[in-house]
Length: 294
Image 1 (cartoon, one colour):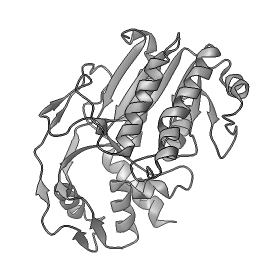
Image 2 (image 1 turned 90 degrees about the vertical axis):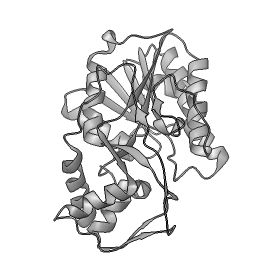
Image 3 (image 1 turned 90 degrees about the horizontal axis):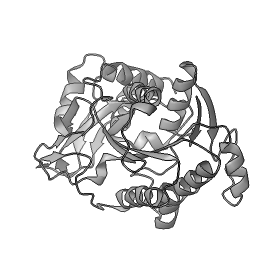
Image 4 (image 1 turned 180 degrees about the horizontal axis):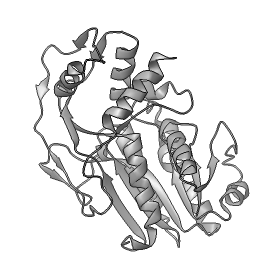
């Protein structure tokens, strides 16, 4: 199986690229910085890069912290994936995996699955919803898998300052650098977390069982999450109890966090989901050491 990963210079794309290579997959990359740079003005060049590829995993995109400029965010999270999907489809690619987010759901609902209504909370979620819609609208022979991921964290393969803004990465870096932690959230809300390593094993299962997946009109949507679901305050307390990770100082921007009720994230297909994230604290330690040594 030959896999093309777009956005391999980013946190998630870089880790996926390295992991699949270690698992003896034939992997090539397409990104704006290294190896094969993307020229979106040349449709033929993108199609050429997709020839002989079985699966495209699209990791190009802006996260919630870098989604500032509307035009750039929509382009990165919606238009680019659509361009690559069409190029891959024209080149005979069998599967296209679009990395989306579980933040497109309304967390005020008690139970959430893949059929739950999507809501545009901010520019980031709006762009991801639009990205899903554009790919589905353009669907061709290439089958589409949309993965709506919970909050991932971990160390990057390449230097990446953007990932330092992710909540857990930010907390870990602050601890490693012995700096005070400031929580900007207004709500003490439950969030689902996962180590990138656990997600990579989930992704391996998906890739090895592509023929066993049930598609509806060539489309499959999957929620990805683990057993790690914490309120922000509880997560900080859990980390602080670990002897190795000593929090210097914790400050909440809002004096009193408004409490949010716990919601249950579900999936209509649990065949590939991990029951537990057994790499959670191992990823935490490796990320801690990464930040400590830079």
